Length: 71
Image (cartoon, rainbow, N blue to C red; front, side, top):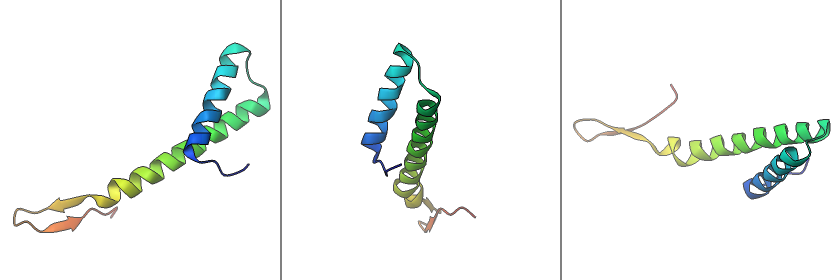
């Protein structure tokens, strides 16, 4: 499947959600929906890590800043 940006992912996920409520999804559409949701969550987590977690510093009482790591 082509690489979607988050706006396209959300649009297609919503389109499938509306169709599911109205008439149901085929097995193929259900698989597509699940894959799109997974991709959206991967994108969200990566963006969150890059923008938030990678910019957190611990500050000691003496003012020394230490970058937060996964160790």
